[in-house]
Amino acid sequence: MYVILIYDVAEKRVGKMLKQCRQYLCWIQNSVFEGELSEVKLRELQHKIENLIDKKEDSVIIFSNKMGYHMSKDILGKERMSTDNFL
Image (tube, rainbow, N blue to C red; front, side, top):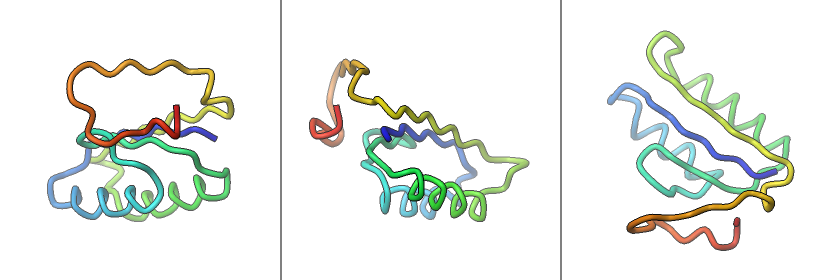
C-alpha cells in the first residue's frame, strides 16, 4: 500500500524518528516520508514509532491508500528525493 507519513516530534527525538522512518520510507521533505509498504511492514513501523514518541507531546500522521497509483502529485520547487517509482 502507498503510505505518506508526517511527523512533528520534540527536537530531542527528531534524529531517532528520521532514522526510523528512513528504514521504511523515502524521505521527501523535512518530517515527510512516502513509499510502498505491506500491511505487516506498516504495522511494524507504527509499533516502533509508538515506542519512540511521547504521546503527550508528539504527533505522527499516517495516510495510507491501497490504490496509491490513482493519486496525482504535483511538485512545486525543488524535490528532495525523486519518488518517480512510487507515483
